[in-house]
Length: 228
Image (cartoon, rainbow, N blue to C red; front, side):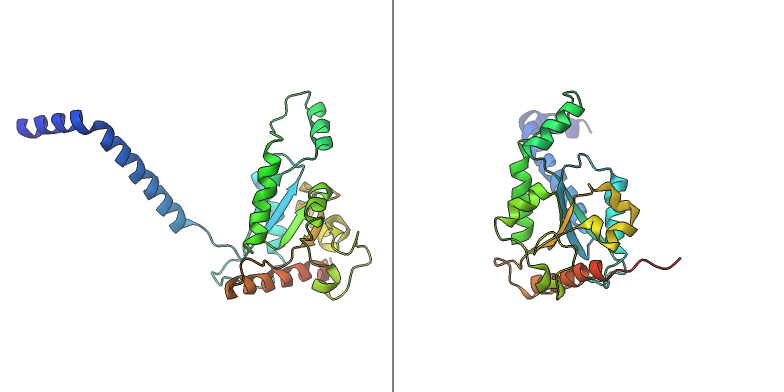
């Protein structure tokens, strides 16, 4: 027993930091494996980008629930209809100044993250992970200048009468947006649009997801509130 104790003391003396570093990476790796194994799959992913700061978990869940209610089907066939909402706080310079004044200088937001968030959205678009977007007009115009969206007439068959332009409508102008109270968590001028198919990711899986997203987008416009 004494020999084992001395061996351990000698080992720890010579290999203390090597052991700590190895244990650290083993722990990180194990956590990563666990998270991947326990990660929920989603039928689709939707982007919100606008001036809402720190949307609560309940608000995110409420917005997701509204879209899950009209999902055409259980796309991944796992028994649940689920949507992942990507929530990006992006403010124009004017919106930032306004919120800064309202908060009397105590605003928990770093305007330098705007570029990073816009890049994150571009990545979601280019990889085909997300097709439907809920955007502040400021953010919408950034991507509109990049010709990122499909004309409504092309994806729906016709352009709704209340469309703002060829590519978008206000979510609050749709019967869908008016019926689900949880969508009130988003600003009234939030616009709804559908991105063009990714030119970088052209696998059958990405194409199938894009077609599913198109059906969900169409379901937003064909939604009819249930009769009471």
